Image (cartoon, rainbow, N blue to C red; front, top):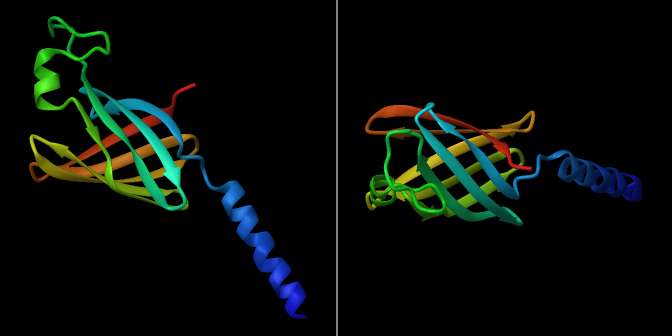
Amino acid sequence: MKKILLSVVLLLTVVTVCLAASVDGVWKGLVEGQYNLTLTLKVDGDKLTGVFALVDNNPKSENPDDAGYTPFVAAQMGKNPITDGKVDGNNISFTTTFNGKPVMYKGTIADDKLVLTTTFNNQPVKATLRLAK
């Protein structure tokens, strides 16, 4: 009986891991339709690391660099490392910085989409991203 129970638990664990959405990779999307967001994510066990990068979506921005960053956006947002990242099934959480202050994000992966939420200046902010191919 113990062998059967152990086999069932092992099988369920393998199925759960296989069905969980893949988090690794480059995710791209928009934050509230205003900024292009690129997340480069890497998972090791339940630890999430990577880079959070906001790019100005304003066609009036001048002198972008090769990555599309304008001087304003690079100074205000730019590329920031992800810290305190965690993965729990299809849910992720991490912290990044904006103007030197921590900003915490929570996200859910479903139907090949990553939906992130945070609160910034006491306002809820939502971003929807898709895995880049």
